[in-house]
Image (tube, rainbow, N blue to C red; front, side, top):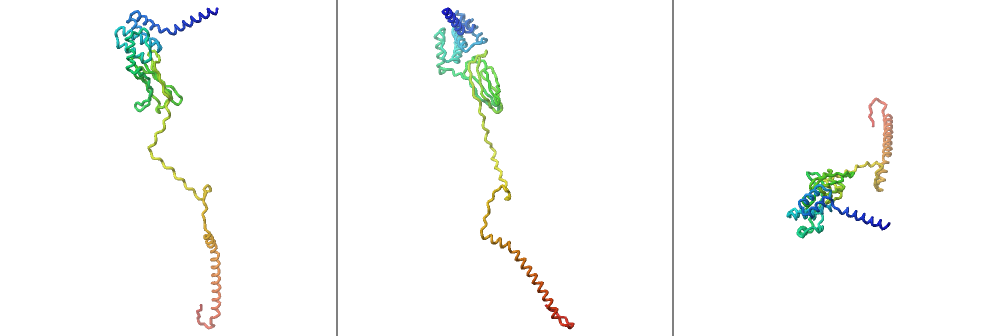
Length: 295
């Protein structure tokens, strides 16, 4: 019983592997037509698969390689080289299958060597300014013709990280950023017509930019407001007064009693003298009627 279960499990695993390894049915039909030397039918089927089928990157590699063999068989060397360039762009170290004849292998190797072992295909994301407004631009460089159908670009903008996206047909796409030019990271992908991602790239978010230095002269700091000397909140150093000043002050303060006393004595003396003089004058007047002036 256990032996039968093991055999059944092994057969199921083999069936699963064969299903996963099996390519799209259009590719199988086109390869069968090529093996039957029906090159026109093979070419039509390959073109149909390239236009309408949802193919993975591995299936695309198989399509371009086998279609290059069809072009070679039909004597179209230019179209053959274009498909070989697509293979080299997707995977420069790809090894052609057993169906590839020596002239096709040689053309593939020569094409890679002429480009330094790789075609240099790259998806680039960079920040640009157009008409004074900030943008993020994604573009594919050195890509063979008709390999990339459209570019998808997405950025997250502050403050909440809201996503803004743009898809543009061709090899270039761009997104307008807020006026500050700040973003929190962007992602881009180069895809086929059916949405298979061929190349991808991303950039980190921008850091806040420092404010530009001001060209205006610095404003001088306001002068401190003078505080009255009587203010209790201001500490004042005591003024030093020498010992010579103290008696002088005391003398000035004590002069007025003496002045009052002297004045009083003078007034009293004047009154007394007047009385005495008056009395003396009366006593010395003669009895007769003559006029006598005395002082």
